[in-house]
Image (cartoon, rainbow, N blue to C red; front, side):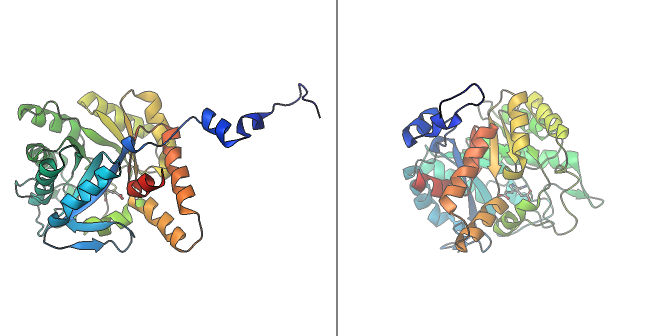
Length: 324
Ligand code: PBG
């Protein structure tokens, strides 16, 4: 049949692997990945997180080897989460000099300085109640929490963190952290703000890994309602005004419309956080032999790029490095 004006032949550009590669619009590259690490106090600890097969809590003595392995795989950055030995009302473990993230940061910067350390700036792993700030009258006190978060960010910078990533969702956290960093002489350290962070059920496995489940209530007075779209632009807009250098959208998979909105409205690099529950679901299905893990993971991570993400934070980063 000859071609007529009545229809177009889109299959022409799909007819071989070579032509498909030539016209491909989005591609994953290892430069764009950040791999989360859970660092635990103690020695000789390498505990697999039950709800996250292939993800471990490791003690400091395993960290050098881990960092070298990541660099060898072409991964340029890690996001550090700390699991402290003790917790208190204020979350002191987040901002003391001997904090677990501070120690891990110093070690990485000494042994493998080219590996970027992105420090998650939050209190929930360190507070006895598991909330991301300090509690007054059964709610998280925004402005009191800001002081401790600024202190946390500065202590992370002092330890050598390359990027500060505040995930606490207090109002004004970017402004306060920017000012504190500048006053301490760290005006060159970028802030990767969890600008758009939803109160999501997809964080469940992370809370096992980081031991950060709130002991009462939930995070809905500070994290966003998953039903909202315009609110994401208000959150991202204020963070840009306050000095954010990167904007994180989190979770990623169920929020790709938001990744696209943020990409369209701001020039700032956009980061998609492919969170724990998104990882666990795929792993569970793959372990049952129900899906082709490699194909599925590469498809969904590429979808994050297509939606507009420049950077992807993912527990799959090591797998991806092996597949690409
Ligand atoms: C801390 C924080 C959370 C995640 C990253 N930083 C959890 C939360 O808000 O409970 C979740 C990451 C993931 O699920 O992979 N505030």
